Image 1 (cartoon, rainbow, N blue to C red):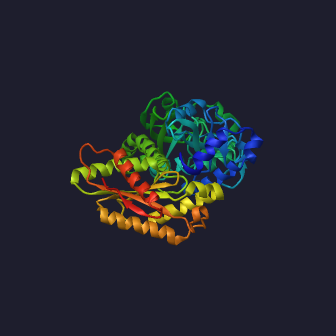
Image 2 (cartoon, rainbow, N blue to C red):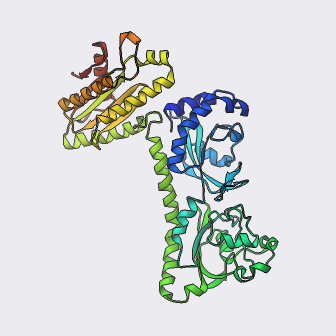
Image 3 (cartoon, helix red, strand yellow):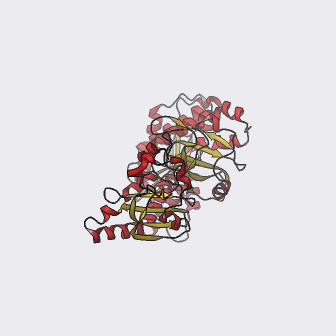
Length: 470
């Protein structure tokens, strides 16, 4: 997240006016939206926020949010400013959101993936968040814990409010306990109505529902307890169920699995016991693990990918070099590194502007990738207009062939006319360093040697490849 278009735009926004009208009219706002739109669509996110240390939204897909204070709890944001990445529990949205029927609804539930945004020095300067629909993510995964025909699994907070949707939501809407335009998430508190709403819902006064006591399960779980009840108790519909529940203190929410008493005891008694008891013991861990893997994977992918070019970033390069150095040392295999620089790029940027320059870098990154085919190889953006290619198990001769292929392909592509220094097309210069890693050789030295070869190529006239020689 901390590179390319995003890094430049966020830094400029932090140093610009953060008044609503100024943010709405700032060209950087459109630039960020255009950048994030395909990410939101591919990941199923509903929006994004960029939040300052003063908790102000300076980036968003919606104009209405800009310049406002973030609705995310400040204590949670402070965790992100300390470097943590996490997923929030569902909460009410600060702006109207589309419900399942396509209608804009106030206070509709939402949740966020929250991540720190760091500058080039590694300091957290802002917080990046993605808006997630709990109906599509949280509830979908919990539905996998359903047992039998009448069973369901749902999550709730310390106030016994639902954090996931339930299977009998339409019944409660028909009675009037849940608003027809809303979802049960954050709308329904797990009360025991005192009567069976399935049988007597038509005569039940919905206004009395929130005056009723919590269900036996909710009363126990919201105290931080976990338990199992096979004798039967009334659920939020007043239906007799058996169930098991677990409070997850780490994530501060509870999970319950329930099934109607009559179905549980109709057949396969011992099997149903086992399903409930075994199922819920691991359910909390499974759900927590799912969200950790799901979103840390996405966040990791974004944090290892260059935001401008889509190839690996400097962090991914550093991790790969460390692994390949160990591989070369252990198996005595050659490791080749290519340092690639776009010739006269600073002057090119000055003449044509950063947007044209950014487009050229994206094209060049794609051309380099087209020349490197093995899964073990890595193409990364080293910084600015400089790229690095890591080629494990590759001799100096083969590395030189690949470097020449890259150089020729970039020139043949004829990317934009370049009037700088009399060049007709954009070109690249490439430095090559090949070695079998031994004790006492570290990564910075090898990179500097590849860089030295690169500048030998530049000094020799550019649009060249050069192998480093001691």
